[in-house]
Length: 353
Image (cartoon, rainbow, N blue to C red; front, side, top):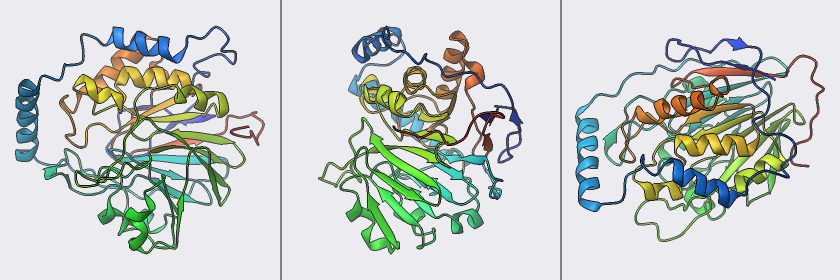
C-alpha cells in the first residue's frame, strides 16, 4: 500500500503520495502480547500526571474560559476543493473536520459522520468544515457512528442526495427516518453492508450515544471497517470510542491498512471512558495492526477542557518517542491523502475472515 505522508501544504490541498510506509505495528503472532487489562493499566499509569481530575468548580471555570474565547473568536476559513474519483487501485481519504471523513473510491463516494454546521451547542467552530458541495451531491453511502449531535447532524444530512444509502447503529433509525433517504440500514456489531465494490462491517465502539440532553434512550455506537475491491484497501474508522478490548479484535479480524482514530475531547480524566487521548490512540493503532494512523476529532469544536491545539501536539510527541512518527498522517481540514495498493502486492485480500 502507498499512502500520502504528512507535509506542510495549503489548506484543502491533496497531500502528495509517498512510498515506504512502515509495516504493521504488531507482529502476526500475539501469543506473548499483554492483555487488554494490562494495557489499560499501563495507559492509566503513563497518563496519571497529564489528565485532570473532575473537580467541578475548577473544571467549570476552565471550560467557561475556553468557551468564552471560542464564542468571541472567529472561525478560520477552510475552503473546500472537489475531490475527483480516483483511478483503479486508489482510494482518496479526505478529512472534512471534526469526525467527518470522506472516502472516495473509483465507483463510490462515502462520507462518515457528516457535520458541516458552523457551531455546536452555540459555540462557533474554530475552523470551518471543508467538503465540496459537488462532492456532497455525489455521495452514495453515508455512515453514522453514533447518534450524538456532533456525529449525527440533520441539517447536514439534509444537504446530501436522497439517493444515498444511510447506515446507522442500532436504535438510531428513528433519528433519521423522516429525512427521506432512499434506504436506511441499521447495522449491529459484525453485520455488513455491501455496495459498489465496498463492504462495510460494523464493529463495536466503547461509547454511550444519546441525541442531545433530552434524548432518554441509550442508542448504539459503531465503528466501521471499510474494505474496498475485495480487501485491496481496508480502512478502519473508529468513531468516538474509549480504549477497550474490542480494538484488538479489529486487529485480529481485519488488520486494516489505515486506522482513522479520534484524539480529542479527553479532558477531564473521566472523559477517557468514552474517548481516546492521543496516547490511547497510539495504543489503539497498535492493537488494530494498521500501517497508517489518520487522527481526527480535534481542532474543530470545543467539547472538553484541553486547548484545541493540544491533541495533535501530544500525538506527535508520543509518536516520536515511540519511533512511529512516519506512520502518522495528520491532515488539515479539507486535505486529502491517496491510498494506493503497494506495487507487487497481490490483490483480493479478504477482510474479516
